[in-house]
Image (cartoon, rainbow, N blue to C red; front, top):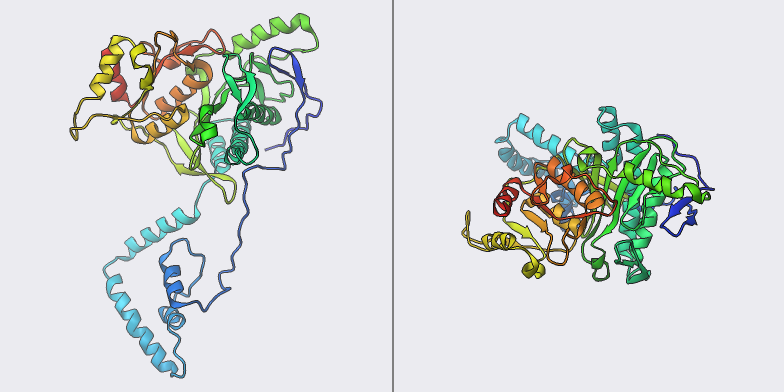
Length: 461
């Protein structure tokens, strides 16, 4: 995988005020990495007996023992001023007791368990290796591999900043608003810059669409690939100051006609922007890849390239995303619903009837559904993929089109959930079939387990 050339004289359009930003990025510095701790397995051979027992029973122990049981006994029970014969005899008697139980296990079963143990401890697969395997299998091309690697790098840096946000004074508002009129947090702005920098540095991205940008951003340093990347750099940013769950959402559309323009020539700017908008506004069914990164007690990078859903958890010791959830399948039904019921009186009667159904005791345990609401779309979808249920962000009397953005929030999440076997609708249409007419277009959304979405649609019909 070749490293893109350094683009030190890069200019790119930032917001509608035509500010030219030329950020630099140090590719040799990774935020969120950790030290590899090297241990000497034979540094302390003669440990206390209790410590040795703990080492034997702990699967993560790095201490290496001899395969000879009598050797183990001699370490555990050193007998001074006794003959070697006595020690060996004691070791044989001790070992014979162990062998009595071991006889019950066949050699084949023992070999299988040993193989599973080794695979679980040592055969961990990181995101980079997984992406390369997908490329070799022909599921993605080399250009998309580079783009996804750049996104994962941005997520690692954002995760590190979130963990230290209170320490380095990154909490609170920035004092600016985005195109939606929302107050921007400091980390909204910084995370957006990190995403843009990593995508620009990849050299494979032609157009960037972000929640924090007024218009699509054309990337001048595109060497190949020409991908359109849409993203929300920080979802649930209202949770930042209280250290609650947040996340990042992204989607990648296929190569299209390059959308480059000279920002020094005002006469072509409007026309070029219109061309960018046309290229970027695609229905979710055209997505080549989509995913999210969850920032919580663990940092989880979840992705789909159209071949199922896979989740990777960040190992802080080595700074790598490690495969922890392979081919996720959402349960067909669930007993959790996620709605902001503070807006209950603003919803229409059909939806209120559906909420009444959820609150009634029912099978399989005679209990009602459990209401869970995090205030972060990424957190809601992550839990739903693992445990099932339904999430809803409907339209109401004050928000006729719902609150979530179609292009870079609802479409990528709907793509993931459908890849896992779930469903997503605006109440009448499949989310992935809606063609956005504007970059920041909003839509109602109901998403989750297939059986739960089907029941909802019966109420809304």
